[in-house]
Each structure stands twice: as C-alpha cells, then as structure tokens.
Image (cartoon, rainbow, N blue to C red; front, side, top):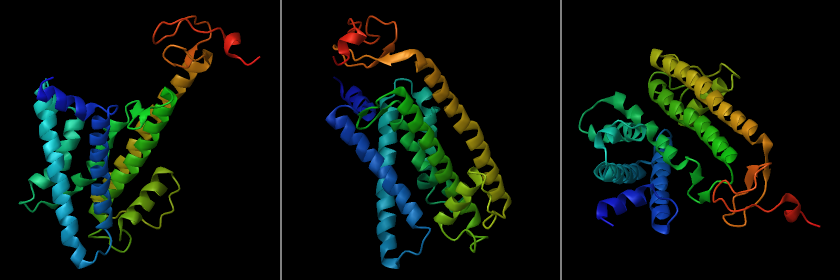
Length: 265
C-alpha cells in the first residue's frame, strides 16, 4: 500500500492497534490543550507559565502537522478544505499562525479545539463499536451538550473577563453562567455586561434549542424504529438486533436461530 494511503488509513482507523493508538494520542493532545487553557484562567505560578507555553506550542505544531497530513492524503482537496472538520482545524490553528500579530479577537478560536473530538463520535468509539445505535445517539447528545457549554463558556469568559472580572473571574464562573442559562435556571447572580458577551449568550441558547432537540428527535425515531425488533444473536456474525419476523441475519444473511431455540429450557 502506498505511503499516502497508509497514512490516510491510520488517521481515520480506530480498530487496528496503530490507528487506535494514533487517535488516542490525538485525543490526548486535545484534552491536554483544553486543560491548559482552562488552567490559564486561574492564578498560575510564574515559573510554570513558560512550561505551559512550550507545551502549547508543541501541541499546536502537532495539530498543524496532522492537518497537513490530512490535506496531503485527501483525494478531493477542495472538498477537504471546506469540510466541517477542516474548518474547525483551521479555526484552532489560526491563533497560532497569527502569533506574530497582536489580534486578541482570534484568541477565542482556541476554545474550538474541543470540537475536534467530534471525529470520535460517529457511531463507534476508540474502544470498539458501541453496543447499539441508541447508545451512539445518546453519546452524541451528551457530547453536544458538553461542547455547547464548554465552547461558549470559553468564548464568554474571553469576552467578559477583562471588563467584568468580579463576576467572570475564572473559567468556572463562565461554566456556572452557561449551565444556569442552558438549564433555564437563570439565577441572575452572574450575567454578561458586554454586547459581545450577551450576543454569545443568545447564540449559546439558540444552539442548545436547535441542536439538542434535533438529536433527541433522532433518538426517538430510532426507538420507534426498533419497537418491533427483538434480540436474536446471529451465530455467524454476532449481530443481536433483528425484526420480529426475520429469518436471516440483516448483516451477513446467515439463518437465524428460532426464538425458542435460544431460550433456556
């Protein structure tokens, strides 16, 4: 297999040891990068700051290398550049590429790094296939809620911390506001005062109203679809969910055991 095809395979594969290890490594970089930025909203000892800056530069450099490899491996490069994942990657790398320019606005894009984890929630996990499509949908719903709160908390913190430091002192304060807003608790003790912060709060609520019910609709449609299905394990491939009147496996076509044949005597 040519080198480019091998690299493309392992960047997407999460089943072979090499592919799984590579993607676990990328996921680890994403989490470490996000943790560093959360930590920087607190008082960090001065000797520790250069180490965190160095780790950040290394991680961003690896992100850039990954993006270049994905671009090189892409068959349709124009389609790749304008894909959702590519746009997220560019938004993540933009502050790093503009590091020599003092443009504070672009710092907000660092909070989009967590969205790179979307790649790992497409019906299967790094530890293997999910047990059912229902679990995959629930996982995506939970990740959507987490992403909305995390990303918008970061953006609101960036917008409010400088002008409203008494209320938005740390990242946790922004998370507190986001959770109270998304859950409609509305305690009112922490509120954004800038136009940018208020706009982000509105966008956060709209994102939650649009994305979460839409995904819950997928789950409900899935549950209705599986209402007439039963669990009969195929002896050939192991697939367990089939229609009540099915005689052959929907995956491999192997004859299914009769229900009374798999029930205990």
